[in-house]
Image (cartoon, rainbow, N blue to C red; front, side, top):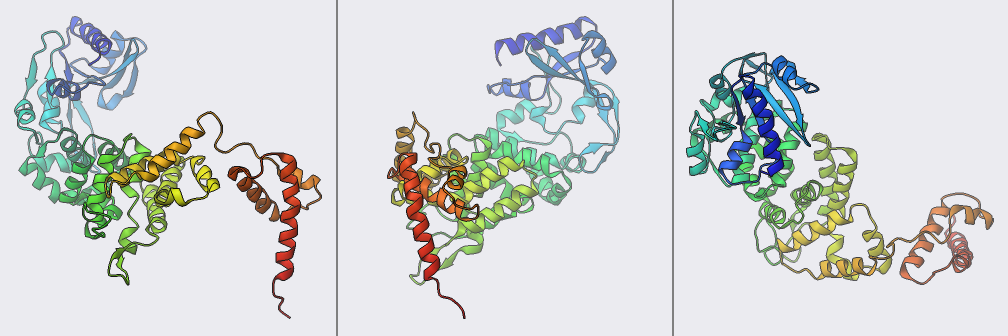
Length: 450
């Protein structure tokens, strides 16, 4: 916990306590403090009603009147201050039909897991533990508060949260909690895809993404939320190139090797080989091949990301990284212009990080990675894709009528520029004349149908 965060949280809590309201830090901050993990935010639970909180903190933001949630700003931080409450009957596998304000015991009974059901007094530091969360944390167990069947029936998203917390902390899921999770797994389909995406994103960018994927398989959740990845559990790979095992084991290892483990990069790693489920076969040489799996994979990745309602910009970057990931395995064989175009692409940082993780998760050969980072270093003080030597306006001034030929000419001139064979506009315009003559000859040589 940063010192300033703690100071501001204590200031908010002190005002509530001085006004006569029982007030506690609750949930993740207490759990992470007990486990000696970094604390990024602090939630506050109080006996004060929302209108009392607003009266004590003018300018606070009531974001959930029916749920008793007020956002209180103090210094550079915002704190979620929630009135002790009791949830009514849950609807739609996610939200309570109504809530009533109650006691701290009511508030504790509605929480998801015992390790998240810890309340710490801001002044004394005493921790109230109503359901054995401290013991479960010591035993490294994720266990539902009360009856696991009830908790998952109330809110199906808790199933993914169980997997996320287990993978984040390296904990086991307690047996009855695990069994209830499996029994209720299909109800995850009642949850919005945005919330599913958010939980999956936490898992694959967290400290143990491989463990998260294993738990998703063991609980049948992966087949429900990402069947494209689940299918990889049945896909063998050629041991010569993939001593790590099947395509699913490779995907897990790729995620584990990824640096930096940020969202777009992690999703590219997760999806980069999903095309293998449709393309893997035994070749004439008796070996396992997955020809053009990157193309099939890009289409499948696009469908999966659309289903999960990814923003278009992120989706496009990830899909392009999936499509291009095999190119980097042949980087040293590529022409100079192709390498520079690749380096200048918007998704290059993603596909380069994917390539390094992909190699480390298989044969460990980083030759192409080192070559590409060397080219990057070469162009650190100049643009890898320089301004064009000629434009469509120049072609018009040369008397060339607009049409599809413009794109062809401009691309070929840019290729020469990137290869270093044409470096000035005057020389580029001379090359245009040569290109036109060649195009006209190709057209004249085409066979005619009489």
